[in-house]
Length: 178
Image 1 (cartoon, rainbow, N blue to C red):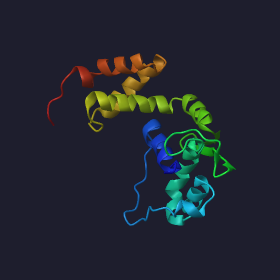
Image 2: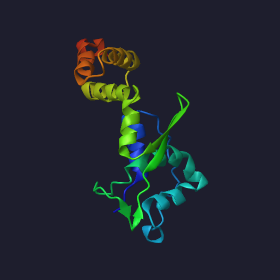
Image 3: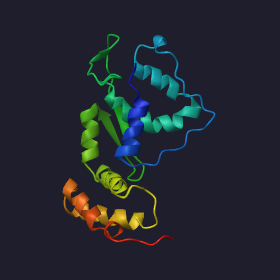
Image 4: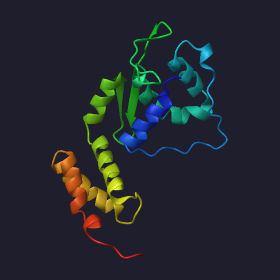
């Protein structure tokens, strides 16, 4: 019945940026406190994320998921929750580049994602996965790198990604069982 900044942030990190996601401890209680005691969903998640056992992963997901808070659990747009204005601010950290970008709403996240090649490179990975039906084989890294270079040289258009996959040796030739 409520939005989930954790699920939304995890989706962005995992499926749009192809970032490695840490394993959740098996004995971790993932149940949230009842929403009745909180004014907003954001307040509920911030309280949950303050737990030291949870904060490591939530620091990755929540700040990226909060910009979606204008959309409820059903995807309906809202300006307020229980009479309180929605706070859709967040932060995305790029560990590799050593940068932090402040977010305010979905458009700012979209602007961030389209400003670099990380999301585009991730799209290449998922299209390659779809084309090959698997995501783990010995030649994968070389294959993905070649497709990514070809796509990048041609503006990361869908056509350039698909043409790169179609022309890759892993797609045009057969490799014997090893």
